[in-house]
Length: 303
Image 1 (cartoon, one colour):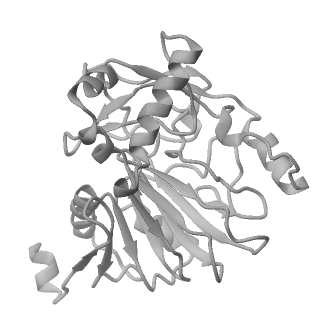
Image 2 (image 1 turned 60 degrees about the vertical axis):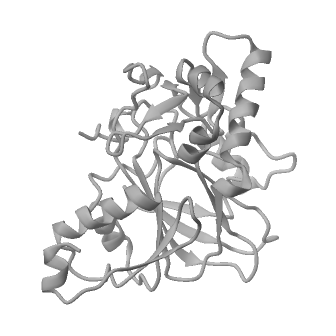
Image 3 (image 1 turned 180 degrees about the vertical axis):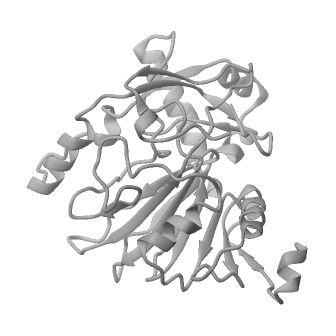
């Protein structure tokens, strides 16, 4: 335990959610003044567990931003979608339901490194968030498939299947999709990224991937199905049921997530703040690159 914690008579307790990822963290007060040393402690926990849950976080958006900034500079709310404020995105069931596996904002060259979600309105049933361990998925691949994945790169875009229109969208959801794709972004990332802090390798794909670069459409689809299936195997996934005043923090470099649309027409509202990310690097040392669009107004590049 860090000395600063002991000096404040604080004891952090961890309850693992599964053997591979996820932990409920107790003994941390996120509602008051936040010491910089707390950021290092939480970063260590996030590197170890990939997803952290905190109960009883009764804060406003401004304090939420301060919590997120423990991990680094915060981004703007979204590259195309207006936020509840400059840096806070309202994840509102009335406007959008991201019923697909994805990693946040991978259509820019430096996607957020950390996502924080705070529950404001929860549902009496359903509305869970699934989180998958993309590093565990990579470790489970046979060596031949790991070697193949190491060599591949993928094109991610905000106009792909993740934002595919509903068959019968509400006016609010149709408008949200229109805004979401109002400016097109494309980025090329390694299929396997090396985590800059832990050195672990993980599959870096998800719902924004349009294609594997340099192969046919049929081969691209087959490869993506193969790797994505590995990410979402049950042993890699936790299912978090929301309660009011909870904060979920996950490493966007090591996970995918999925907000399940299983709560009928009930209202559900989370607020999201993301932390600026580094540019992913593959096993071969090559960095990601922006192919289309300029995300510099959205996020700085993290050191």
